[in-house]
Image 1 (cartoon, rainbow, N blue to C red):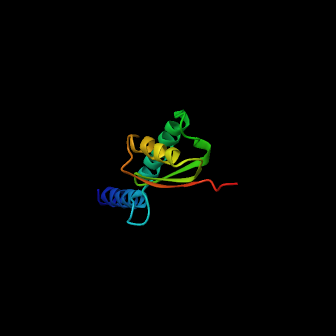
Image 2: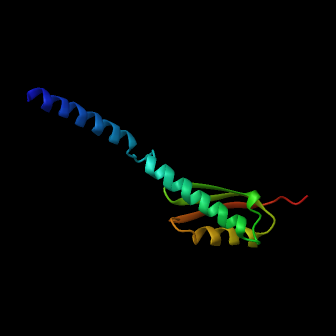
Image 3: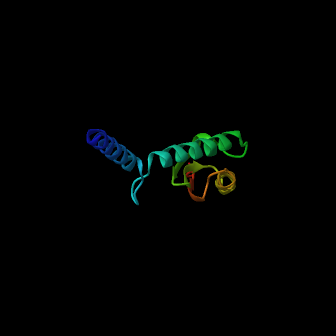
Length: 106
């Protein structure tokens, strides 16, 4: 029976190491956080595509631990503000950082 307990201890140790590898740290996201952020990014991008007032192709969406960062270039300030409002309403978004800039005049 000692061998059985030893094997059980080894398996438990390996499981603990595997689970620790999936856990997040202050600077790195866990596997679950990566998935959650990808879902939020997709939802925000989809909402922007569905909005007539925003050219979604010009807006880049990145998410880190529920904080959505919008960047890119749009034609008007109103378009940048609308993109932020849309992103704010998406489930799972904790905060929006709007770094969208106006396209330079040509």
